[in-house]
Structure formats: C-alpha cells, structure tokens
Length: 286
Image (cartoon, rainbow, N blue to C red; front, side):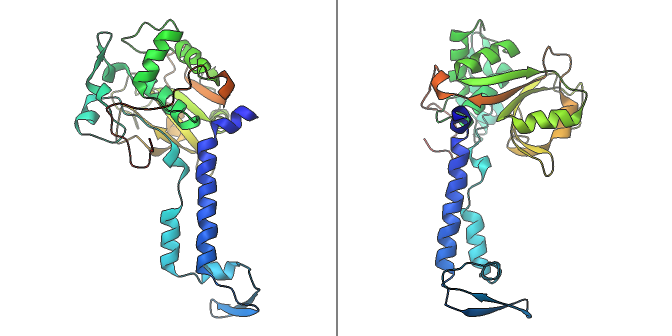
C-alpha cells in the first residue's frame, strides 16, 4: 500500500543505510584470495572462493572492525521523535525540550496539558517526510477541529486532527486479552495510549492521566520504544507492553489509538519544518 510505504520512508532509509555501510566495510575488510583456506576455531577449515564473503571470514574479522561496524549502523530508534513538554526539562536544556514548556497558551501552561500534542507531533514527524513541533500541531488542531485550546485534547479531536494529516486511525478500549493488545500494537505504525497510576503505579507515579506514544514493537521480548513527554527518564526507553497494558486508564471513554496507515495525498497540512526554540538532538537533521 502506497500510504504504508510513505509512512515508513524514514525507517527504510535507516535500514538501507545500514546495509550499505555493512557492504562497504565487508568489502574493504576482506580481500579474498582465490581458493584460500582459512582455519577457524582451531579445527574447522573452509575454502574461500574469489569474491566470496563467508561466515568464516566474518568470524576472523578483527574486533576493531566489529566495533566500528556497530558504531556505524544506525538504529530505527534514531528516526523516532520524542518531544518533552514541561518547564523543568526546558530549564535543564534536555534534548527534545522546547520553550513551549514554560509558555502559556490560551491562558494555560503548555507544560500542564501538552502531552497529547507532543504525541501527535511525534507521530507526524516520525512517520512522514515532514516535521512539526507540538505547538505547531496545537495550533492546527484548533483550526481543523472544535478543540478550544488551553487544555487537554480529547480522543475524538486527536483522531480528527490526525485524519487531516493523512493518517488512518482506530480508537480502542482495553481488550480483555493481553495477547490481543500486543497484536494490535504490533500491527500499528504507532500507538497513542492514555496511562494512569490509578490503574497501575509500577512505572508511572502520581499520574492521574497522561498520553504517551509507542513505536517499534519487538515481538522477541514484547517491548515498545516509549516516547514520554512528561518524564525525561522514561523518554526513549524500551518498556514492556505488559506495563503499558496494566497502566491503561480504563475510566476514559477510550484507552488507546492505533495509527494504521499514512497517505501523503490525504495530508492537508504537509508541514515541512520543526523550526523554533528547542533542543534538537544531533541525530535529528534540520
């Protein structure tokens, strides 16, 4: 599906870059000789033909080359945006924090209500070829929905805003099956969830309700890459889906929103830049 491809362009770029670097390093590091015999582990021998790269060649590569390769390979997590919302993060000049953390919008501090806008900005900037700040999408939501400003945004208003941005989304209530929850997270490009320490305080403390974003589900250990605008120590960490599942705020009308697809042709915004007063990480290009 074209929209699905567009939504994953950044991650595809990282993967293809990694493969290109791997090929270059292997090509430079292993000059193959015709019919050369290499001994591995002291006992096993293999024949390396001209131009071939074998497991044996990789096993005999110098450790310094392995270290260089590990450093050179980009991670899919590098392409994920994870804005911070509060004044403390901005005061400490944390990466991903911005001047919005100490700014009032429509009479209220953005740091007190901006988590939903940080989530939507994370999704838009991570899954499309475009970028925006949380405050950019705050202004856009006021323009295209009935959101009045100066407070938390509702599920319906977020869904409507994301639809204007070209995303197909679905709203969910907590399923009785944890396995079903994991399946939905795995199928989504990203998930916006509402957590509360009232339901589980093993990870979030003193948190009556807070929107966070989930990316890059890993089926091996059932973890997700967490973008948490409210806590720098939680932000950009891999967290167990079981933790997320237990902390879902079930007193809300809905408990999470899955992002299923992106279609550039349906994106009515196409916001090209994330310019403003914020701490941009070195890995995030302008």
